[in-house]
Image (cartoon, rainbow, N blue to C red; front, side, top):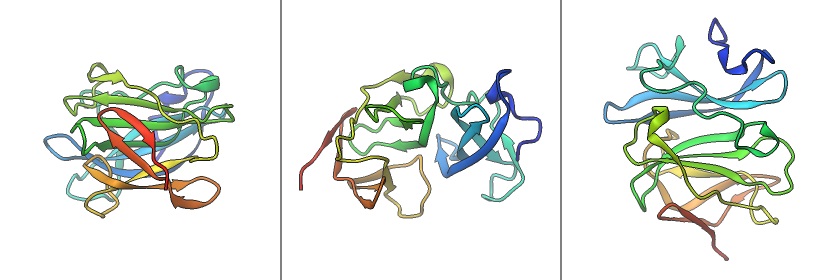
Amino acid sequence: MWGKNTQWCYETSSPGRVDEIKATQVGADGGKFLVVKAVCDNGTALPVLWSPVDQSSWGPPYEITPKAIARSPLFLAGPTCRRLGFEEPTLFTSPADGFLHFIGHDHGACSCRKYAHYISRTHSLKADAWQLAAPFGCSNGAFEEPNPVPALGDGVFGGKIRSDVWVDFGPRVANAGLRFSHVTWRNSTR
């Protein structure tokens, strides 16, 4: 999967591994992508988009998503704590506002486990379509790595999510108790 597409690690490092791969379908044409946490040898984790060459399948071979569709990596590590990038890079459409959202937990130990949060009002993946949205979450024991649940139940992200449940992949797998409301987040009590 590395091939010649290793530019996300820049000149300061080289690719180390990939993990947290999420099948994602976004856009009017329903383009298929694998949103991959690509980790460089220096510990930086960046969301890289790979596309199945045959868009009628989720299977290999894959290619880096063309620049005309999305920048790769989708977001840079600079705005994250310790500048180490993202865990759990996730794209989804909110049932509350209809926008395409990107969230990612800060990679590396942080005193506040804040999530990066960007929205695309047009559902475009191009760099100029994204705007920074309110970050959410200091865990304070409430949640660690919450993930939305796709509404269709098929495990494919990018589309609408369930508004009533998130799954937390922190120290214990549990319902994170999060609710989404118009580009803001709140932790509900149960």
